Length: 199
Ligand SMILES: [Fe+2]
Image (tube, rainbow, N blue to C red; front, side):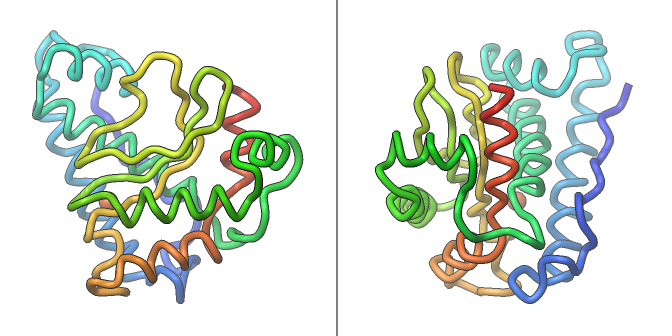
């Protein structure tokens, strides 16, 4: 059974002017689709038959099956990234999630600063994450396709793609502007809240 490209959770132009329809078109329609096409070719054999994407990621990581891991993790990370943004994003966390932010970071501002530092400080391609680890919120960064899904006791709540393909058409080399725009206008705290509630 082939893995399918999940549709964007909003229209291709819904995040403009912050992220253009052109960027989403390439990022979702070419990059994300490309990972799934390669993953499907790599997992045709019996080793991964019928396994859900999360299981493929964990098994490929444990077995050091690098090509499968990279494409499976990128497929999962991108689906999670689309949902980490919303046309109605930005603003302040609410409800239980806001309480958890205050408890573990002191303030919403401190959480934002930690996300900025992780996203800006990731050398080369990778991801910044908000995760729940052993009941506590933490900010992480990962390199290339790496994902917190491979760590036991860690639940991803939100992610930010800092591969150049995520922002280069709109921001060129200005990764800091893309990160600030993500946090001010796009970040979907409701998604983090929902992930926290089911963690
Ligand atoms: Fe990406």
